[in-house]
Image 1 (cartoon, rainbow, N blue to C red):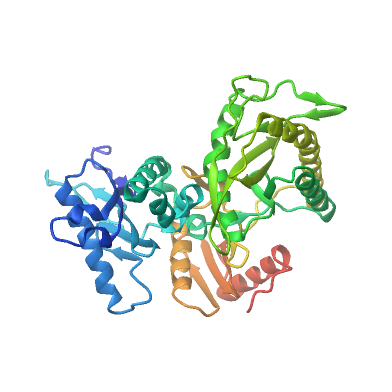
Image 2 (image 1 turned 180 degrees about the horizontal axis):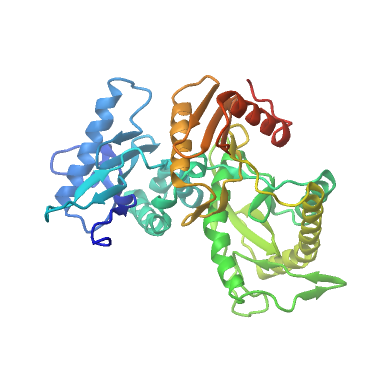
Length: 467
């Protein structure tokens, strides 16, 4: 009886995903020409046309109320639709089925379905990954017309949609920020000096980014470009290479010796083995948005131990074996030493700060100005997995507070007493947002407010939060 009468939980799922341009099929009978990409592809043609037409109508209808701000989403009992105008007249639409609970009924009646309309956190801003690897829609149209654009969309979204794990989306996905690695001044100066030396020695390099433990330390890119590249690195490229390492494969058991220095360096993009005569020296191409137009670049990602460096070089330059060997010989030993220094300094700082204790509070912080994010709630966060140290109901409250903050421009503070023994506090101040979860069963409102002030004084002593 127990197993047969249990509730069943269903996570959110992707129903459809499509890209269209209403100007491509303006005549009657040519509506299918509007559709540039549609998932799932096996959907019958008339249904595709009907769904695209409905979205067109919704967008046009909402324009009558606010011409400058078209619709972003439509919430219904069963589904949620997200609209994103990527470029002028190019629309991307995602339709997600809301999470639901199936409750059994007695007397053999069909189960009752309850849709959880407010329990999903999804944003379409992550689709800027499309532009990182393909440039703009207009650029593709200029290069090869609608046919080339459709090929690029099909190739990109076929892979992208496989990495879209809606059940793992939470507040960090909404922010899409960058985690910065904390460093002392001397070690930071060493890294800056390393970047300067490499860029001077290898003059082809236009931009450099330096990461350690999947956190950013240095970047020469514009912040918005770095945000997109950071997401690609941490949710796609790095996890793809870390799994073989954890399994004991593809890791340098015998590091090369360059002079008197150990050399653990290797390419994550490009040649897997420089000594292989058949090695291919092709690198992914990315597009970064300069002031005038998109700039096309080769992306070289090079790693030694826990440190990774991204070098970006103009796509008009042909990268040769000689250049890769030069980069490997120059960067590998220095990066190995830097990675060791950073690790040592980080461990020293941890010893100084004392043993790890379970704090009475956990928090998520985000700065809209420099895109910095920090979370003590997440134990592990990837595209497919979100391991948090708090209950999903508390994460939902954080999402609700964030939605309230998004509706107003003024600074604001919200304090919520959860059904459990937890208090949840949200502070929005001068483009910064702080979300705190406190486990204080018998605390009152004044005591909770004082505790959050103490947290701000210890963890964010350089940041001014308005009270």
